[in-house]
Length: 92
Image (cartoon, rainbow, N blue to C red; front, side):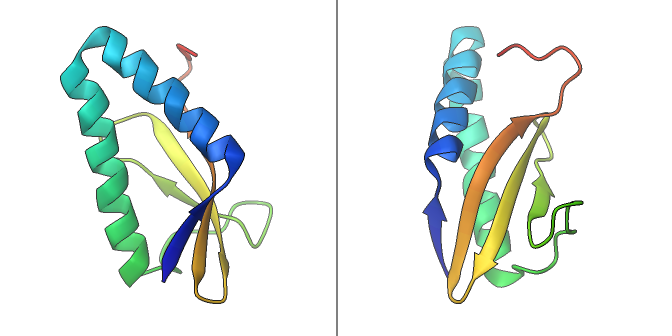
């Protein structure tokens, strides 16, 4: 499996990294590390995450950060659609 990211995902990622870099540069690196771990997990288990209310979109919740990644599967690709802030007090 290889990954493809939507324009919206890149925009969301840039916003999240900028936000955490403003707090602590280590946090910006940490969220990128967590997304890398997510990609490794999804490459091995692409169908393990639950479907959203909008199939065939699935969601993956990050462990350390209040974000979820919405993604879909297409043949040999995992398409990362969005990186959504799930916090009630959204900083962005």
